[in-house]
Image 1 (cartoon, rainbow, N blue to C red):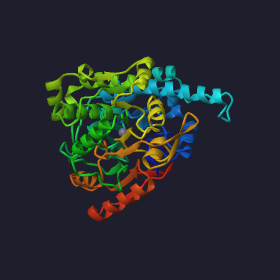
Image 2 (image 1 turned 180 degrees about the vertical axis):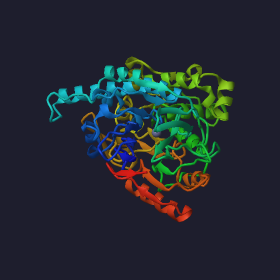
Image 3 (image 1 turned 90 degrees about the vertical axis):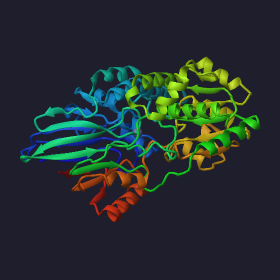
Image 4 (image 1 turned 135 degrees about the horizontal axis):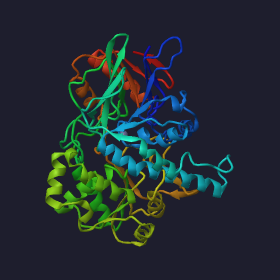
Length: 476
Ligand SMILES: [Zn+2]
């Protein structure tokens, strides 16, 4: 008997966890169990409460984790899994291991801050409120990470091996191709993780990592993301619009506040700003990457040069490390961050978190949202339930640190910077498959997105496709 059980990212875009169980039998013998991704649920409370529930399978009975990439919705539950008794290896590509070294401790730190906030303001029904895991526990869990190169086959048990294929989503991001031995024959399962944009052209500007997911995939069972299953990214170059928005804001004496994830998105955006400044399309104003994590992320990027896109290689060849560019400031200390608040001159602030769910961006938004000269520019997906979603959807106020902050700033969003392929791109990638999979399960999408992609795949490709349901077990 062999099955996949969907323990997360079913009906939502966070909490990715898919259990693969092979070589168990009907007598109740436990099979070899691998968890593909171990992500945190984020966004609305109905999802977040699941972070506090045990896995349906005891953590100590999971033999290994295969991690597709470092984003917290795929990796952020690792320290909790360890807390619950998991001691197995966690396989990831070398850049993913490096990025987790930054992201997981930071996540633990935020969990502790959250708990401290609730205790101070008595806003939790638990007394005392406890963190999901601590920074120290997150650091300890890093010891379980084992680097595996792209394309290298790793045997985890006589019944299961896997390899990583590039997914072009963020630095280090991979699909996990699992080969399982079931009833005397092999089955190939492909877990896409998150799938990046297909091409490095005008329509996906500023890419930092290589472009395009691995083609000619071969799988009997496909477990695929569907974040943008009902959307199409704009096909126009974002740069002229970006240049116009920034130039107008600077001209009226305002500042540009950009909530951006510290890893990948911030780097991508800084490269674009540099390009626009050098070509004279935007004025030279100070740019603050207000995130201690952004510095670490830049260093990790510079280390993994084999993943650079041609564009990035050229830019670094020409201008060197972003850490040394004039007018670009990487603010690591709290004092440096606070000093930005005192500045009354036009400037660009890029800070995280990308959906304004926490982090230093909150202070900048609180300070600058009430000022009509400000531009708040979204360059990433905003999940329902987040502050970013509220601001982007045109609300008049947003609650930050318990206060209702009026939104008088100009709010704009550019959708070209997505790290996810849209529907036409996904279909184009799927057409490169050698054979249609026997079954496809859609995960990592809001229900409408998964439903739309399912329809498109059935109509355009004639494939058998289902949207995965939480806790559903499917045999293969
Ligand atoms: Zn991701």
